Length: 117
Image (cartoon, rainbow, N blue to C red):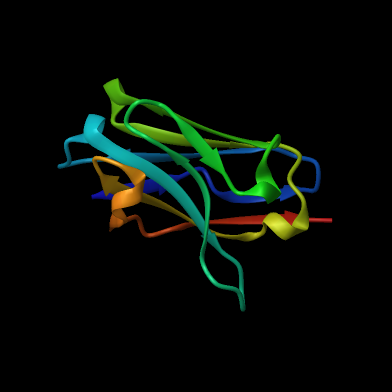
């Protein structure tokens, strides 16, 4: 089970931090991911973090977003800075077992992020 929190509304240039807590899973062996889906667009992977801490980002958020994890809290975070209206979307936490390349096995319910100009 994955549960997100931290979404909301912010003006362009602002920041938000999303959190996702995993329960009932062997968290330390999970690849954790953040996806987003904007209205009328396909869901896209925004950031991933492997069990060993290696990270990857979609080009549009590089330098602005940071993904991090705290294995002691079974949690993953997405620190979003310099937000712009194109970042408006429903953000999902997801997990893959053992490595990100294995594909998503678990999804959260999503948290809305709205950025106004």
